[in-house]
Length: 313
Image (cartoon, rainbow, N blue to C red; front, side, top):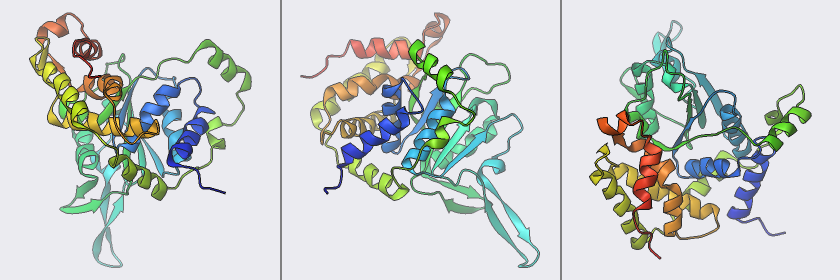
């Protein structure tokens, strides 16, 4: 029997996750595309819509080691990264790794911890390593972060700085499920969590191989010109104080490769970029005072800017 193709196996992953996280196939695909791009994801929505379930379901299906960290105001950087402990028997310090040393880390309610602890994630998310007591420790490969935050409840929170937001490849909203899905959840719910029934369809090594395949997807000059047209438009727009950086353009390009790969293509088309512009670039905009006073959201501004840039045929 022939071995299933990469596309077929990843479609099995999506279908497997859909058995417990129902009614949001595009959200699951976007999240998986981000992970295939070696990118981190920020899930922004109210509590109770399944953000944790999505992260755990993907981790179990992809065969990745999963750790959840509940971010609170008293959380310290060492609680995430780890700490050096003195051993009396050996008369030396040894490093005790923290929960960051996992394949997929869920940073739950990341905006509830202090900027000092938030910044502890910067090196890990950017360089895939951490520095503790002048020693550098490599993180597992793959290493990915899915962070969550509630955009409505702002009391006692610390907004993520732009440098931290820029480390997330995509910012996504979950939204509430359809009525049909909620009826199914109410009538089929058992004492055990449905996500516990999931099995691993991949191993970390196999998932890393898929990430390598994404790197080989062709991103031609026509699509690159279109992406830069959109990026430069953000820098000229009067509503925007700081437009999309080169890092943002590179992130969008890599996300496009993963999106095309999931569509069983070896090349990116302009429509891939158009679909991913808002989730990949909107959170990288810094709006000026006028836009903020008008309660403009970065997503709507980004969508408006993109709609005015001609898509190549």
